[in-house]
Image (tube, rainbow, N blue to C red):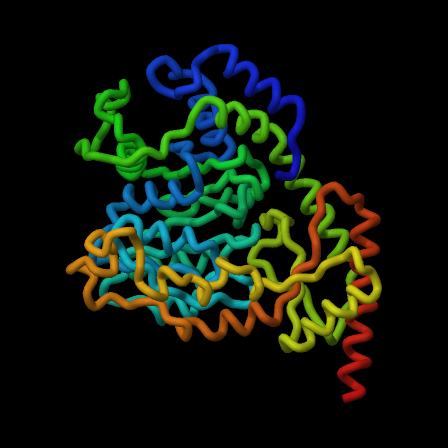
Length: 402
């Protein structure tokens, strides 16, 4: 969580004193409804549904798009496990796509991976970086595919002047502890399609039959799950939403100071962005020619300043597809008969193997992450860039001596 304070404490206290913690059955017009209205205004979207997590948002979005058994959904090989997991949760099968040097879905590989069962594309705006949505949307339109944006790590980001989650047919946010704005755990679904919204609305609430809004539904009722938001979390998010633009402004200012202080260098180059202005600024990434050069750079930074840790996305655990054991072993649920991989309609669908996306692994191994700390002042990021420059010089000297 980037920033939290008295405003959130006061908001939670207000809800607790009210005695109305549930968003329905007396909570209508309260914190959750207010938050959704504010998100619609911020995004310029027709519909927004607050949910218990980013995973829930993806699941409800896929359900809203009527994705299910027999369908394949294209997902990037570098993302949180929830992206392919949500596909499996609705009974469909995730198919992996390589990432390019931007750390997002590679449109060229996307085209190659489309098959006869492909129904949807899930571009992930990873680490606050927008995907190449012009190419992805053009491909989707040409091939008749749905697009659900995973912006769980890019709350507030934009592409081409439009907020992320509003470019495709639907889009998901996460508000968990580690996002730009957060309430510990939460999420949200954006769509401009009323039918998609209504299906997601029913799917997110097992009690939809008994809600006031049931009369407005344009889709048949069905038995959903329980991904309902509550008034306490919504109160926190209303306070957090007020902070969003300021958080993004400070993140981007620190990123720009860092990038502006880097000198052109043979050892590395900044990881490319498809929209630097819309990028959230929550990630500082450098791309090296080899994984060995990246590792040597990290060691040199540590020699200059022990307090600065350089990491690599290849080491980020469940964000890397080769660590997705449940998918690799095709165990998508507790009972084999409810596992999407065992559904008769999915026989013949493609599956994930450790060899699915070798180029992604190579790019992740060549990429270095430097620390982004919103609490540090701009001068600290100038110094961080100077340390990066010095470390890269040492890398070149070492390489030249081999």
